Length: 315
Length: 313
Image (cartoon, rainbow over all chains, first blue to last red; front, top):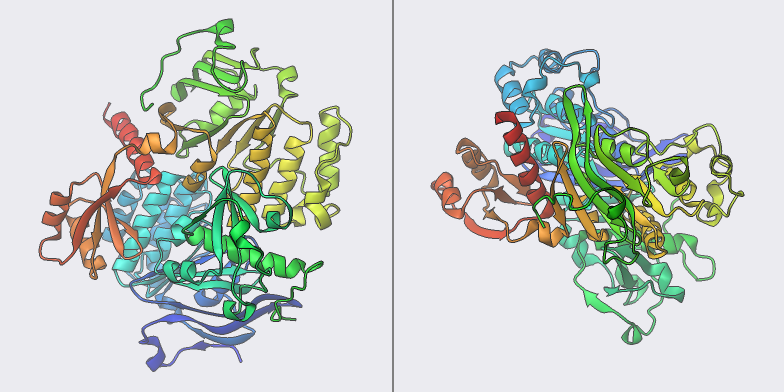
């Protein structure tokens, strides 16, 4: 059932992405019916921790991995740019050689763009250094440049900024914006929620399943219940729904019936007398909303003493 | 708080003059400098950390953070200045009172989590300790190399905390983990600080600034700013461009030499007044306004100024 859609009609379509894609690694379900779209001229972000399925999803879209089920819609290989997790550069070639090689592979003349991107990424002075001798941040910037040099229709970047210092992050984001401004659909994986907040579309994954999806505003709006802020860690049952942020404690107070929450939020903890709660209610942001979604799923998974079962946990 | 302080006291007088929760500084650098040949990696740094305090050390790669940490740990001698831990020079004795989580975590991949903890406990001469095994739950007997990154970080934390250190030094402790795991790691850091430990933590994640009592920003080996995030961002502003034609606006600003950052569908232009931005946009329809700088934007500004000064000076 798997396969890239590759007819002429499809490659001119207004988006790239997946439709209910599942990926099995042997008996492990790495991706569970995930649907996602990357739109030309926009930046989309996939967030999640280690093992969430981000890399698997990105590899599917980059054409590096076949789906076990579902459909993938992507342009021809020559119109995809892909930065795999790690770096995607050749350590034994210099910075300039890496880019010249990439341009030759894709059959494009890109000397002007190479020079401009290197300049903007602060890498001009490192042109003749071996990629293997660059710092992590410099290597990541080179990897992003190499992936976008042939002006791909779909640019897939796996954690371009993880472990990258804040100055290099700004430069990576300039490159990302440039690629999108030139018309690419950019899809990036990140563990930074403040980066995801800058994207047009966000998909949060957990254990291969969609945790939340939409624009950052939609994800925040869809968060069930409220978030309260306290100075001290709450006790008892509330402690299970609390997390630390900005040296204070945030507590998720679920409300509404389970049915209203939709798939992906897990079964909610029954609402307790929220009027008696301490702390002030705050307007959640994307980080709160994704944390709440993770908590809800964690609580549903741990089940145990409460009657939780998300009902859609897959095999 | 943006200006660098000159050390006012030296040597033994450095102790016990803070109004902090604990009278003496747990860690103190006075005029600390480290050269590698002609390269100055750390340049005249003053830093003071007391118990219960969490200092966030921010800086680009090459800013000197790790070199400074290595001098604090006693792994690297200073070229000039003085490092004091608990009022004395770094030694085997002071190392006993420090918990350290390096960027690389410093765990043995081919030992289990429990074995790593036992090994570390033996090195520090303590008992096996509780090692917070409950937090590691089902992972206790798994080889560390086979654990997810987030769990590896928890093991490294457990190891660093097992001997109840007074000073905790963490080098990018939360890199690459999801928000909930990150919050849990900060719970552990916060608990240690609440129990009286001094914490020095480096991070590339500006959102974590809110977890720190104070930030110290380094660039080119120097401290270029310190204070709370609000003190550091101050009243600096960026110009914000909201437009349906963001790609065209991005190109126009670029052509005018005003690099813009993409945020959703708006553009943020640091260091350029709204009138300059409007002029650069020409006929492109857009709403141009001002907004307070984020810590990241201010950080970029501070560190760019330093590198520009270095390049031309």
